[in-house]
Image (tube, rainbow over all chains, first blue to last red; front, side, top):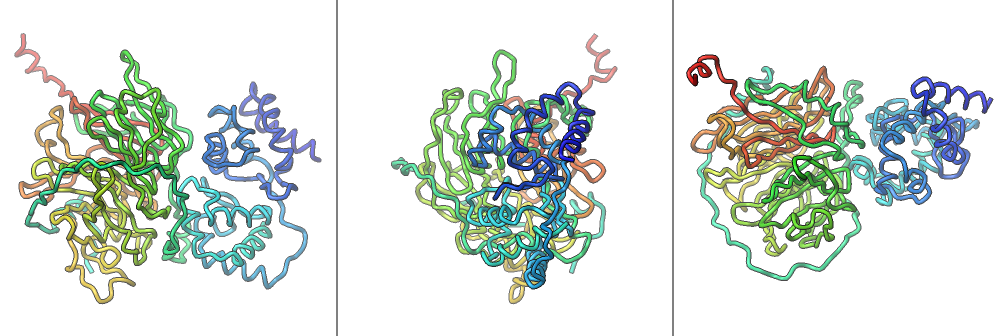
Length: 190
Length: 434
């Protein structure tokens, strides 16, 4: 199954870039080692990339290359990438299958709280009602819960500086307890 | 409430014609005295707890839920893919690519030796465009800056306004390949991200002027925010020039009477069609209040903060520039290349709306003035950045070159265009020459 999907994705990419396909698969192999080959990460605090918005993915790997988003492993991983490499990799990421939420049904009380917080803080405006994202606004549905908690905390403390001001601004009134329940709910969306 | 359901042209003109006149006392201000520069400092960017969400007042309707700010492309568009062929200018004006390859190209300034300086809001860089034996080249001058949107030049020194500090590089055109680190001259600034980016300009009084925006879409701002502030060139003697201003990303002085004019972006989420963004004039430096958060567009009291106030308490705009149209850069035309009707007029870059289902803006408009400095008309000059409700590009700032041509930055594509004027000779003119 794993091989089949990898082969399929490579085929999809190969249709666009026949000459560069082999090179691209070499390029992305180290990415998939941590981020998961099927779009679903099993590594703590490492995000699932499947079905991520290509424009969002492009902005993030651009920020990693320029060291405007600082995380050593990622800064190192994309160091030598030129603009076309960044585009090809982000297009590749967007075509990976969407991650699946955890198998358990979840605590109904926490899910309800998380759902209410999504509405209260209007996450559903930019990220869409089903949290599938749009353009430069990332897909959130079924993202790893630990990565969501880390990311929201980092945006709030400004350990992570956004491409623009939106997330720093939106998170200022959100408490840490709310961040935890937001992540719990978002991680369980399809 | 006055609700204008008129066409775009009429909107602009109605706004311009309907609004106030001022007496115009000109503040005589002191030139700066020499003082030692402040020590280097790199403050950690932490927001104040007063920050409110951009989405605070977003309505819960399905159509509104589809609206989100439009992000600039991180990778600049290649020169041959830029939308110049789709832009429209009046007869005998030509638009060409001047420089490309600069992520999120924003504010424009031109050095005494002809170097074009280009700032960025999302990249950490200031770029320079140089001319080496006829070959134009764009490259980073300094990196590692935080939201360095504001730049200004004075006597060979480049001033840079980042989110929460202002710094300088002396004799910058002598160090285009080996720029020293900018030296911080002023950092008594809030660190909020919302509207935290600055526009920077040097006044006729040789002071640096910049905005401190409201840290929100709509909120009661702290005393330190929602204002225009000025400092001497060494960073000393800070003073508040105007209050009640939501966010400014463009200002310039009228060469005729030395009054400061500035664009102001009004609040989101009130409705699709109100309030309109403004062109303001500062007739009473240090005294004028432009109404935020009590009154928008000069005549619409805020639903929440407007209670107990009247719009008549505040300084009115000189023109209205369309709802959510995001007028940013503006410059008085001081060149001689363009026809006489443009001399002393204001070119304004409307970045274009996001908080509106049918986008508007994405153009350069030209405001012509009456002798008393009020606005006579506002008309489109260059259009076409907005195509079928999508942005092909987004104009951010303007600058007049020595030869009188006009530069326009496009922060979506990371490029700069040049607009020049060359009247076609009519056949009779040509035959007269023979």
